[in-house]
Image: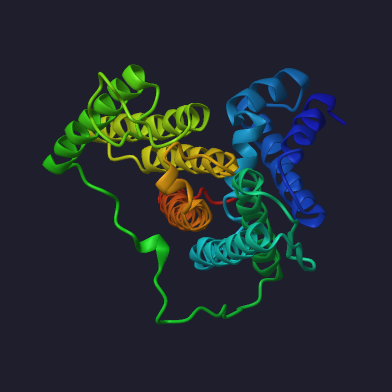
Length: 327
């Protein structure tokens, strides 16, 4: 027994899965290393094995040559990873919305549990739900791949395939959009600094007439200005790059800010008596409008993540030919 060789094989085995397959691969590598040591150095010894192992390569890289032949998810099922994840997350989002509106918990064991929560908690809950849905679909597709059977997965032909959304291209409109958003954010920031609110009944800065009472108006205005600034920064960045991560990050921040808006109290926010009488219908309309916007933003986030993930899988799949096993 050569301790150096066995240690090297054990390190390779750490990166392999499946007991029978792992033993077969390690036996193959052991034979090849011993044969190479004898052919190149005349005899199998600790010194010849050390040189052979160094030439053979790091354990992780060697294991990668064999793991690549047995992917976690078969290429024919990869697009279903994002299709099913997007579908499950859409269901998750609708139940989350219902949990917020009706103040009830929803359970569909073992795939779905949505506790009763408020708007802000829902915003923080959704990213966790997306990761859970992605994990469930990945696990199912992994077992289908490992089974080796030809499974025809259902997917309606009339549906929109999110992973076929085209990558955004740089255009002159990006520059125009960045200029407009920067101007809007700058003006909103100026009004906020001058009047401590951006919700005014007139633009007479010498005698401003705020729509909301000071505390509520300040907090709402601060969040809205933050949205404008985030949008302006994202628009400027998109002038220089077409990366989908810009949209995902911008939409994620917008979702958090919308959650903060939904948590603000709206009991008696208006400083104008004529508007204060309409507090209840305005509050209801504002809450549902924000929830609808949050839904649209969440859909854009999922769409962006689907396109990013699909692109990474395509790059990984075209990274080059997989080396054949040594004989």
